[in-house]
Length: 489
Image (tube, one colour):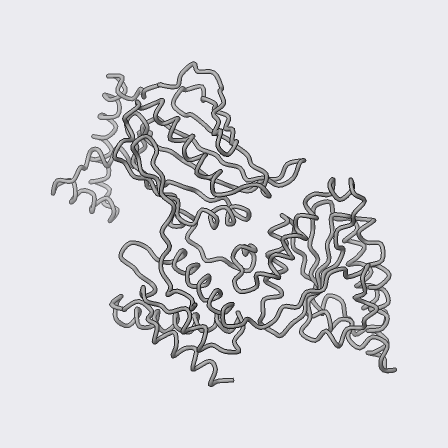
């Protein structure tokens, strides 16, 4: 059965107190929250006296391990009487108000003084009449707890001293969190709104928790998570297991088990080895330290040996979880034991020190995990990567046809999430992932990213020349970009 055509995903819908709530890609929201806080429900309209609801989910670290933190703040306070708000009230939407607004934007000092003078008088009268006092429906209420019995989620409820803001807070262990927990927290937030606004106040309303409310920036190498990796299901599953073992040292200690100290990832260029390393660091919640060849190899006698010793000396002092990546590992320690010239001797010395340092690194600092990547595993001496030093060896192959379709799907959906907005459609709805996967035989994830980059650049140039009259990216344009890249090889 072929892959379905690309389509913008719709979400899971549920009803609450007469309101319809749609969760679009909740698993993706939770995955993104591991790296950056995700704000939800920014554009929602609420019943009186509720003026605003800020809801977010973010990652957090506790002694028991990493968690997902759900937060909500329900405000019944009107927007403060700032200068900008007073000007809006004074100017209004009539022709005179529009004219004065334009004058103010142009820096007209007379118009500015007139409007601000009227506004100051209006604000004084507003305050004197007591109209600046907001309702305090939550005043003098004691902290409480709300719970969803279905998923076992408990949220603490607190009230600020002004009585105008209600806050909800809940935490779920990262390994246990599911979209059901997100739905439950949304439900508890709406329950709190009902307590403030009345039992029928949500009836007929619609709320959307979607990718559109996430920060509109594309995923980068720094923010990638394992959930965003396409086409490498077996590799991702193995890295998840490693992340779990890293995050739960108490379970490892209870059974006398030792998590992997080193991981070797090998495969053709462009298959995503460096990206996977970064995703593993983000999955663990670890700092990322990339060691490149120039940091080690030195043209001066003894310099390379000093550098590698210093790198591991620093590693033993890390006090937070840290993933050390030795990228292009073969260029640092390749052909160990071969050759008699000075360069080969330096490589042999570096390789020898590397072996010694890796022998007891995990015992001296369990916060550190080492990852090495190479395109040429046959160039690395087997004694360097034996078990005990590199316990896990993962082949990262070129993606097959099914995997290429998945890579196209995730990359296109990431671009849609980051760039599409009302009135602007980036991709046509009839993109055929199966056809793209078939046409891109032999391509890697890096190649597919380049296919998309070329089409995006072409469209941007058309946009610049025509002033925005550009059709969405079509299936034929993507296939043409695939053919061009294959022909250029």
